[in-house]
Length: 636
Image 1 (cartoon, rainbow, N blue to C red):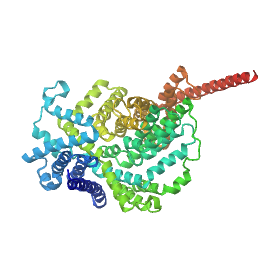
Image 2 (cartoon, rainbow, N blue to C red; image 1 turned 45 degrees about the vertical axis):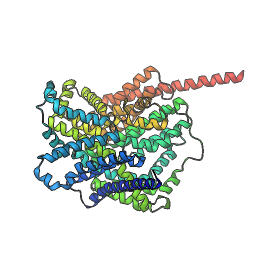
Image 3 (cartoon, one colour; image 1 turned 90 degrees about the vertical axis):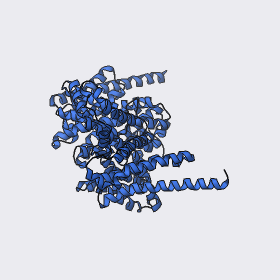
Image 4 (cartoon, rainbow, N blue to C red; image 1 turned 30 degrees about the horizontal axis):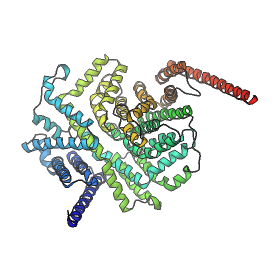
């Protein structure tokens, strides 16, 4: 190859990279435009969003300097994806006028759209969701030959493609619509906050508050991840953001790599539950349950606080148990200096909250928060979102939403099949039958199903599946609608740390340089309270803020004590090491305090006080013995 050919290829690659940036800006720009001037009809809004997202996914290799053949192949797939998915935008009036009737050309376009969507999903997320979607697709054709409840009458290819490609419950259904409106704006807001330095401010605040405490770096990871959850809302993104700082610092202060990775994984997973800006699943929940997002966010306050109290307590006890000392040094950030340096950026989050409080939609609130962070960034020279940085933030936001866009689009394939075959009713019937109407058993089966279905999936996709398949069974058993959906949301969220496929643990393993399975097992230990709390807000909706102030306050205080008791029981440590009897008593105390009964609550409090007094006696006795031994040695 001569010099001229080399220059030509280099210019071609540069042009393709620039084209890709333009497409990313179009994706973000379209979301901001529709938020400001009005959302387009469903098929237009979703097809523009998904077609651009697929083009960006197929052209990711442009940044890796691929061969000419590879580049040609990827751009060909990108072009086909744009045609098959963008068809709804180009011919919207004609498609909408036929109300789901499939033409010959649309049959082939629909097949192409499914194939290209699954390939794009495989590229950006791996095989789990693709295999799940293929399994559901296979079910539509083999259903007539299956026994019992799983049998259905069978459907031809035209009917299946019509349901998936043109139906309101298919690829372009509610989940993708939520991604193309609410979620993309929140992701853009998070990207702009990060590029302006707000994420660093949040981590500095967390480090300043906890750095000099025992186990400070681990506590900073917990606090920092809870704060970062407000602006990212995905477990893996939280790990990759805060973990790059917290995991090496934890290792330097004495934490084993697996423990450091586990703490970051479990802390980052809970960020999806953290109001006011929660994960994508929360926006989808608001749409599915037809509940205002503000109600969802308010209901999430107590569960998220309990989650982080339990994790924080476990981290504190782990530090005491391992003898990890506080960080000593003057290099820790000063909280006032941190606020002076970049605290003004956080006012954009306040803008978002106030807009929601005054009754504005999520889209308008997000839009004003985006404008707010751009304006506020100019208050300090070092945080300014100059045109170049602003464009970079919009491009990063488009890149960050790709996973959600493709996950919700692929989940739409599954939902279309569930709706077509009535599989959701079958699944609910199975849960009710297997549990024999017993609520606790039904909840356990639902959580197990959610954890299995959520393996390797982002929380948004996992929640969509379990909300469709398992939540109706809980509602049928008399569970409050919001409690049922929070239960499956919680369960789907926890799949991020549940072995063997734990996305947050795998993300942390790369930073901690440790075994991901071992990290996920330890993460489950630190986050054990999260697996228990959902059962009790089903039994006691006051933990979701439903009830009068006295009910909510008392339920919250008792739940805090129960969460701390669970941390002590799982760590095997309080003031000193717990013996087996103390651990058993604490395990019983957890249930007594959570259960909404005055008698059980009083009994639990008495038992907890007994353990505290007994631990204090043992601790004092232990210190006295150590002191006497020291004095004897000194006397000799």
